[in-house]
Image (cartoon, rainbow, N blue to C red; front, side, top):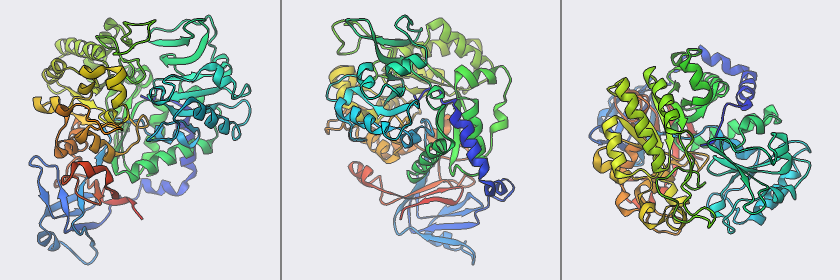
Length: 571
């Protein structure tokens, strides 16, 4: 959801990485990690039978054998590295089904405006004070950035305004990113800098906000009007770019991510991440979703080939298309109005990014050319559009196993889930919404009838529809244990259950974060479960998540292992 990651951060990261000359030798060095064995553990394999074993053997970065501790001890040799798990739990490394790496690192160069429990910003005054503190460390004329504010979580239940940001500084262009990544607020200097005046019309699929009474610009820029990171980051130094990358890299590693995703990015960032991966500056594997607007079109036209980017550590995946906005940002496209709307817009139900004809044309072009697609759809009207567009594409050019990923599918109805199953569409749900925005969904966004159906994992599971779950970081923190806890318990911040019937078992949730997430991007044969011949991508937990669903997020990541090599170990 963090838009337009086709940014100068790409070339700047790449420049920094090339300065690390020692890493170049890794291009020709062996990836062998030798022989490792893990014994006396609770090893959740996530194979087709959900088998649990005591021990495994890893050789040259791949799973060699698994079984009892006595069996695996017979494989130990003089140079074998032995880990006694002492009954700790080992499972496949977490696969990030959808996020925006390295977007979570943006907090390294901007003011953190997140509301509790992620941050400390509870009201507009605290938000403004954080931005005033940022003025002290930002040169006049440079962009002054804030990241992660959420109007629905602030005491005032509104966005900050252009005039409020003007009071902070008249010498800095200011922009605040909304937590959804689909919008933000700019001050007068920022609007002037990007060429938005009182006479600028809102584009199709976007909104330039205005005061409801005066009609003057209020600074709010939504969807296709929102600023791109290209514009915002052009004044930052190479060091700042590297700080963003390093912060995100370390955060993902310590959270047990062994395959990360960068969803909806351009050519430059893809190149940077590809070379960072080749130079082993990214310790985990990467899956990249090219954005339709730029990189996707170049792939479609034959300017680039997906296969030239693909290695064991880097995979160029489906083309990312955005069909609507976000529910918490009130830009998702719904069939019925939001539960509570302002008096001036009683029937407001959001809006689509494309009309049906446009979306059908885009989807058919990629589908006809054989590309896998990942289409962002939150509101049920947007999901209707996606299903209709893909049904037509499948009729034109049938594919036996398309695996179109419907990203978020937040307000998917039961009839839509059935259509997905028929057409070969697989949803990737966002269940941490139940924790961070559960109350707002019930009380304001969707109401008591539609609200509990958000991220309908239980309904999908009962239909036998394969799905993944994700955090959409940096929209919510890249915390697999929080994601697992939310998927299983569906509890809000205040402890209310959001959709009892949508709960699934812990094992089903683990599968949706490992093997099923790998399956969605056609990588299930090499990762996602602990089976012979697969990559030794693993995570060790302090306890067993299968024992007590409520205690899942109290567990700790003790070690992250990629290709048999430890990339993170807790102190």
